[in-house]
Length: 382
Image (cartoon, rainbow, N blue to C red; front, side):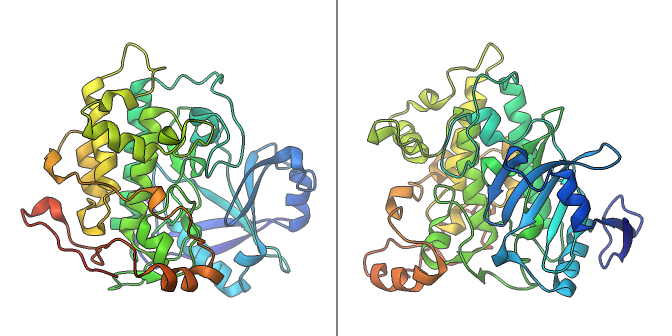
């Protein structure tokens, strides 16, 4: 039998009436809905756990995320986190509709999105951070205007998490497989509620690395230092994927083309940036706008954190409301700079010690906004 758990908001959220009801499902019901969590119903897997498609008794199709053993919490802590998640509402975020906290089980139930993820439908093939092999032969047509809608939507969703939620939420794992698409191809960011909340007045949070190599900012991959600017770096890589239609890492290609960020930087320096744009795009392609998006992607992936714009600035750049100088674009932090690092928490300290002598410099300032100042931010050697 289902029951409901009443949560009262601690912080007002626009458009909400101050209360939110989250359905509590029994483990038995979710097991039946997913046919005992069968592999045939598995639609994704990430650092927090596996996701299954399920059909409830009333016929509603849902996405059921079974949190992994490493993510399990006490009931009180789980429900406290759930309170924060359930109160967060935005057009570009997935909607939590229920949970299960029965015994040792920790399961979240979300609305099911018909068009799966960008990793499966746009990028199409097995890639870094994509747990499902898709096909570019899908029925979805990702024309240029659709890609603009997706890019701007994701940016707005991240900006909402970073700048309108109190305390702010750092996602920590922005990637194509965590961007879901509804029937109208509106992008919805998933897994945001499972990230650690950034405490008030904190400039960064040191925690275990939970992201995906290829999308990871250098300060996160090397030191485990996660900030809003880490999410911005990941978004920059995602933006390059959206424009190019390819994964950030593809080892099937010749070595010089395997890493999208490096290839984009090389073409930018050669003034041949248009070669990065997806050749499958049709007549609605705006080449100048697409190149501007690629440049914004390079800005978001700058080596120094302080040189990366905040997400509200990125939204304005993408929409054309704010212009920027290409002189602000310097060499981004490349995956090959640190791809051989082991990023597991057990090895992170050893990696930092053994490599600190020859690592490149990274800024340790998160909140500096270079786009409102003519000064060049300084860098501090780690």
